[in-house]
Amino acid sequence: MPTERPPTLDPTAVGRWQRMAPAASPWLHEEVAQRMLDRLQWIRLQPKAWLHWGALRGGVAAHAQLAARYPDAACFVLEAHAGRTQAAIKSIAFPWWHPKRWSGPAVHFEAPPAGTVDMLWANMALHEAADPQALIAEWHRTIRVGGFLMFSCLGPDTARELRDMYTALGWPPAGHQLTDMHDWGDMLVQAGFAEPVMDMERITLTFETPERLLQELRELGRNFHPSRFPALRGRAWKARLLQALETHLPRQADGRRVLTFEIIYGHAMKAQPKVKVSAQSAVSVADMRAMLQGSRHGP
Image (tube, rainbow, N blue to C red; front, side, top):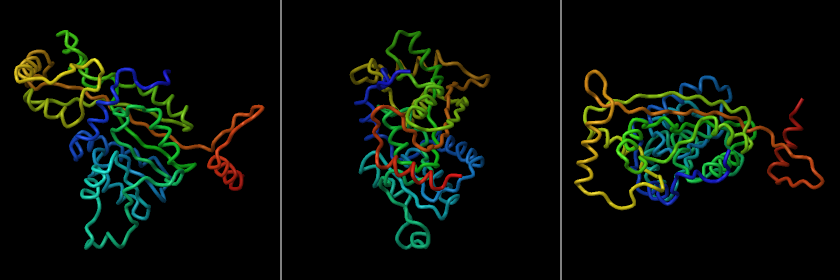
């Protein structure tokens, strides 16, 4: 498996999108978050502290459900930059006069100290990471030993109908290549996670008009492929695109256009760190502390 950044993803385009993305949770993200919430029934650990990674886009409604599920747990919300943090505060934090502002654990809109959260929740964020392995490593550092990661992202079959249409018409790629769930599992293990459990499902969305389809795609993301069309498009291009969507996309019997989304779900635990035995080994202070604590509480 390659160790470098995804070769078909432009990090500059990713950074631009993270700054300009709508400050709201798309419908699909909230739906996927609900399906992630269903998977929590199999997790026995009750977090004392948890982190919502990218809550503003990952699911504001789901955040409220998570907070209600773990009412006594400290909560952290981490966004990509200060502007999004302020928007998250407006969407998530209780106003000063609300009783829950003073009765429960505080919500911290900042990064928690390393190795302090029992659960890290990251919904529909990983497929937009310019350096996903670095992001997974950061998640690993944030979680306490014995804690767990819950995440979801888009998979390779996403928008396959749109990709096929672009290829058939000889247009530049419709989007960057998305990572397979088995590769995500390998990255989790390489980062130090244990017992990764990966699964996927396909959600088929239908649209009455090409205009509504484009509106949905604009809310979900952008084309990050380095070989995408490099300049601005005009009205003539938009009319051509709408006509292509009208003509080439598959339809249901009722005439609605069809678009497939592959959703990947992942869950993994942070195990005790392992030290490779060699003539000279280096161990971080945090890892050494975790190993010593594990040995004290072990059988």
